[in-house]
Image 1 (cartoon, each protein chain N blue to C red):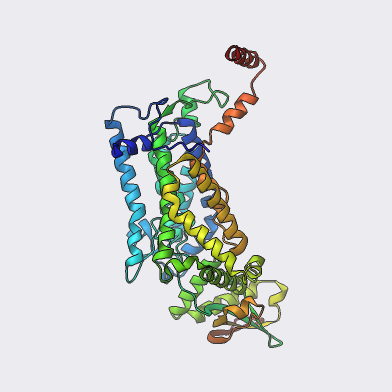
Image 2 (cartoon, chains in turn blue, cyan):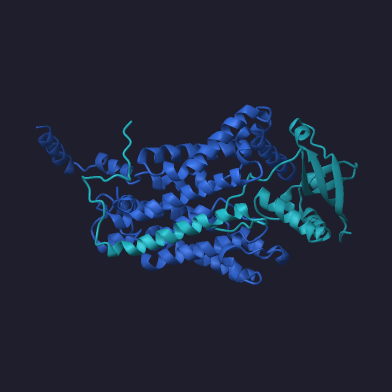
Length: 322
Length: 174
């Protein structure tokens, strides 16, 4: 078997431009919303104690914190670039611009006190989208190129490898990040014992104590489940299976769907027990790339056929039946 | 259930499009991105691992926990002598864990006094009734026993006062 050939076929499986366009709009909308609603928070961090500045990512190029006004302008520029990114407008410029500005903004946001792990995937996903032809379908650019067409006859339903590999890459980035989280658990001091139950139970308890003391409340399930070590064992084994198995699970369509749904459920479980909001994950947006997201719009188009189109469709169906 | 491998050839569709030269760029880009994503795995085997963004080795929930947990946090002393936990958001912005790390790092750098003073200023400006009877703000390092806390006893088993700041409602704090 030619492994390289199989890998290339896998990587370059054609996909519709419309799918990549929808993913750009969904992921870009989330990123845009996040940055726009965190402007005050980032401004507050940027004007904080400079001794707490510990740059990460591209912020490591800085020797010292930027003036707060400059940070605010970067945030505003990110929002400004995000709008055409989401719309698919002037994408050759807005795509890479938003990707780089988002990375700069979130690197800076994570350079104060704590590295958040909830948006690593988002930054990388937007980088891939920004580098890809993600506005050939479902975008203003596509509509401008094909004047007169709109959502009812979406441009970009044709399939091409150029629209497939970015989706593959985004899926694999997601899977590898979960894999890394799994490796960190078993490579840590507890090794495979991490999945035994008591380790995870204690992690949940520590989170509950911190939350109770610092915010005056914690998720009631933290207390309720504390004695149920066996349940944490089940959750621990399931978590490790999902994380370490991610790169293999995403190789097949149905196992990728199953993995995405179970991992989505895992994040809701984490939220229910620990109150940790991985918003990109809880909203399911991180998992959209595993699904043919353009299909529901296709069904909508069919069900919303105009009277003039309906007889044609019925006739075609009759011909096929005959 | 039918399991169609996406690694296998699909005869009804063109598996690739365009001449091979069009694929060189995407292959190189993909390989670089995936290698970069995987690179932080080496941090697991370093003596002093370093976490980054957006490339991380995702060390969350891996730190071993003992029977107790230490936490640096602000508390207030009311005029009846009762001590209450003050919300972390008085000390910093962000989510709970970011606030926690902010307080801990500030105290470690020897700036707990300034932090207590900042919290006192915010309390003085606040019109929340629960702060009306506060006399003093303290930054403390508490040790909680995990089983006891989860069983309902939220008292610290040990407490070290790192900074204290008297609230003066009439004017400047002390």
